[in-house]
Image (cartoon, rainbow over all chains, first blue to last red; front, top):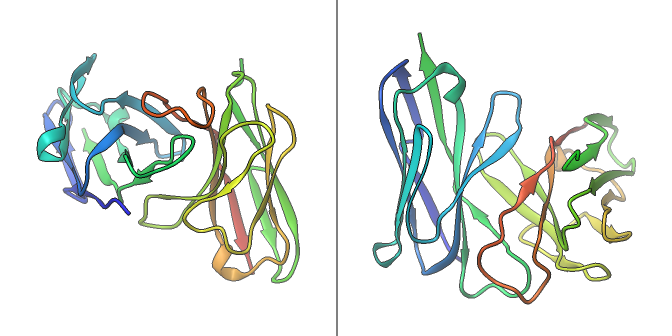
Length: 112
Length: 117
């Protein structure tokens, strides 16, 4: 099956700093999503981005499908950005429905 | 519009006991999923339902059964719980039905934290 690697595994930032999270995947994908899991465990979908670039406020994401990676940018970080960020992909060899394979996540801590 | 709801939020079982985790969505979604999340790991797919009346195994189905009761509800059953099933369980749903690929965002419930002693 498809492999997903995220880096770095842990990141500590001071409030106001910028950061880049990376997701590498081992095969062609037709679906890539970024999720934020807050400290209370809730998973929130941030972006659906199998290719191209999207922006939502202080967050943006870019996927270069031909080179099999995706980047999540966080600008002017806030303490509410703390949590774990997951990249999840669906490869072309899956069958029905949208079966996502998750990476192990990047744990972000934003301090005052 | 509650989205995806899960009950219970917390549960402690003894080895060998059985229980059913309930999931419901009010977004009229066609596909539903059960995942488990273990410490330090991403989510792994247990079972999914690509449409009402169908269910299929995911990556880690052993020890679990599911029922797609209707379009709204998808339950996960542990027949004889084992300590290895201690985990946080997430239910998710997405709009498209089976056979469709691509742009299909998954929406997650709040999770059920299960401990098996």
